[in-house]
Length: 99
Image (tube, rainbow, N blue to C red; front, side, top):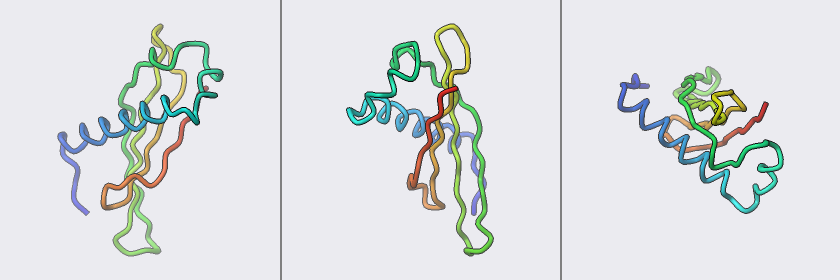
């Protein structure tokens, strides 16, 4: 495992933001608009946290969790979106939560 530098972190956040936008505009996810009272395209995406979780049972395997905050135009946190990557940087899952 290598340490992430500032450029790596910026790239991971950018990848998560792009993944959120792809998720938000997917026709299969049209129902998301009914879960919030603002247009999806007005959500501001803000960096949240990046966590590396090492899977001890499986040597050399870890998961990187990249979380972005979903902010309303009035600067209220309305949810979060998290991408999960494996040690190779491939996205293996995601999670979207509105609060």
